[in-house]
Amino acid sequence: MKKQEFLNELRSKLNGLPKEDIENRINFYEEMINDRMDDGKTEEEAVADIGSVDEVVRQIANDTPMLKLVAEKAKPKRALRAWEIVLIILGFPLWFPLLITLSVLVLVFYLLFWILVIVSYAVEACLAATSVAGLVVFCAYLADGTVNLLPLGYSLMALGGTMLFIFACIGATKLTIFLSKKMVLGIKTAFIRKGAK
Image (tube, one colour):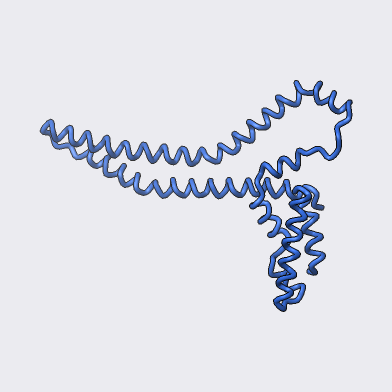
């Protein structure tokens, strides 16, 4: 791919960013390609070293704050006409509750990711409490002069379960963080690519 093709495709896929950010990114990658060409690489090799346009867009999306993307998306492209303002005001009783409902649904969907983590740590806490309770009951039997090994067995089983289940808790936490990052990156990439064909 030639330098100008790369930069044109990048410009079209960054359409969701503010204009000054697009120009800064284009200038940055143009300079990067020129530096590689100055080091003796061909134009195609210099462009290939940078990676595909999609990889670059994902990296830019990862580096760009979500608020900046939302602000650019919400920025009106032209001034509102009087009849549009009247419709917005008259439609407020309809669109505002829908907006609140949509926001709550998005929040609930996001929290569903974290329920797995919360439940796994709750199970971990129950296993640890069972282990301690079994030991306390065993000691109470010993203090009473009775030998009953059943509570000690329960305590040891719960302790083993606690030690093994912590790995499931850690795995669930890592998976949830990974999925959360992917979801945010996907949303940011969608905002950036809003004008891409």
